Length: 162
Image (spheres, rainbow, N blue to C red):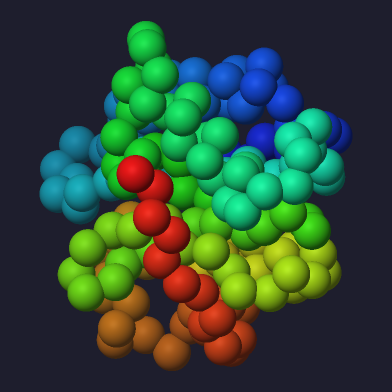
């Protein structure tokens, strides 16, 4: 359901390898039992790095990710969901979210590295739960179950990626 890459230090080379692998994973087809009518979504791709080689800058980690996704020959729509989360504690936690019915990249509003880690785990939990429910053919709105992120407030704001 999810693929997580963990980097000691995020740099352009490692980021590019991650994005290329995410694109390759997105092309894999799921093999299902005969007669199965459920729609299955491919694996989500999440990136976690302990630190970065970038100098401090407003949303610089996300901007670099978007730049790599838009580069030739990769060409991944940054809002496609192929890459769903980026976390570099102390530098930022970013995720794909929905605002006003549209997909957007969202930034966690805290600057606390521990908040970044907690929210990365919480959103990973929520995403995997949602995908599991969908793969079972159930509606999550009719369930008492949920990921751990359901129990936290949602301090996120949309980030302009253009």
